[in-house]
Image (tube, rainbow, N blue to C red; front, side, top):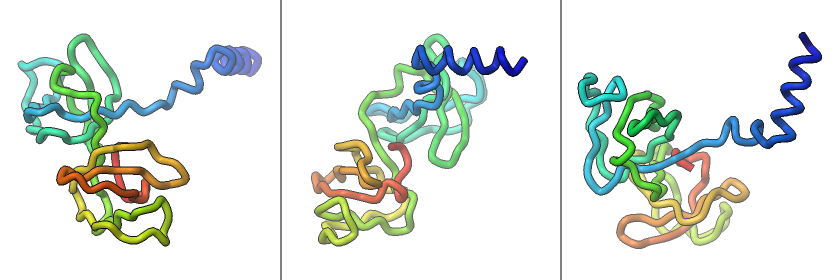
Length: 149
């Protein structure tokens, strides 16, 4: 049994499957609010209306439906057409300081309160993410103070 598990592990590593097994696929609700359901069907129970640009993690795609996780960890289903590739992030800290440089010594450009939506400009590097506020201001925020990256 142990030999079989080792062979499967080696096969997964050699084919690249293991490197994608835990890849996160983040998207955002499109330009219009989207209804989230408890099942992959409009006949399912409506559980939430997601505001436009809300970031979600796509856990599974089933036909024209996506099972998504929100920043609170709740799982629900949404029509895949309601999602966009544009990456948005939500502030999880009480007050995130957005800086001019990706470090703690960069000047503070602005601050963003909890639940503020920010657009991802550049993915995380060394614990910092380049973001853009809807008013056009850009800067760097600590990745640990955001969800959706």
